[in-house]
Image (cartoon, rainbow, N blue to C red; front, top):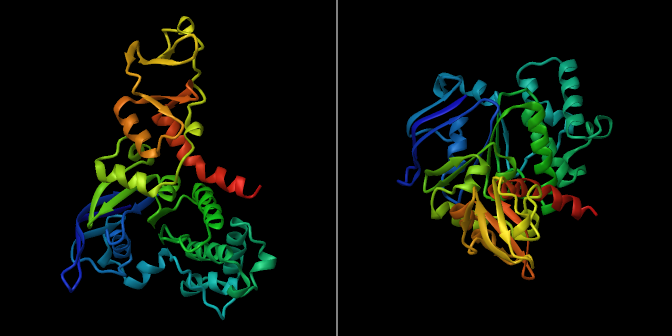
Length: 348
């Protein structure tokens, strides 16, 4: 779908924003760029619709070099959602959504039907909202309109540049979850830029972590968490994720044993306890492992990930007793559901 071949971007003052980038994004993929400020993530995204021109290298969309497209047609066929949504204040919601379809000379009937369809898709009553002006909407409603405006002409590609970062935390989390559900319906190729690792892990089919204009790791959320490429990735995960509840990471499909005698040695993995339920060792495929692979309830997320990289499975101890185990799979499942659970609890 989208291919970068040795792409670099150097600004007139000599700043190299992107350095020899090679990357392929699949059709229908939700692809997330993340990294510290100035890492080149937004520059990379803007080169796709030529808001930033490539200094060297080639970007292809569907096998065709982007400079071979008419620039206006290129941009009209790529939806774009900004942090500051910039709805036209003098236009109604319907008129805002209709901008690109009108440029593409859609009929009024087709536009009206499309507006209705899109408003219903984000659960905004068309009869109530189509005639409202932007100043009559909440921040979350404005951002929803911004998203569906980008989808109005049914583009194959949608670029989203930190679209939720200006919103309050509860609204932001609601929209993140809505975006994930929406993508499951529309199956667009979405390129999403964020500085929030929680957001990246929740939304992305793949996450591309950049630093100083280069890719440090580009992988699924599961692999980013399970096998961080280096200390930079590990530290970025630790610094940019929320404090998590260790107890909620426990693998609920794995049951502890009350005594060593009850251990079923045919199980693929288990941990051995004494009669008081105190851990004696971690066992996997019959091999006893060190009790160093035990976590207390106050262990931080960085330490969890480091230990999982070392041993693959951890026992969790509370008040001197083992209450369960954490695996790579259970951590990833927790990371993906954590935001939704926080939204539910915030709404009471």
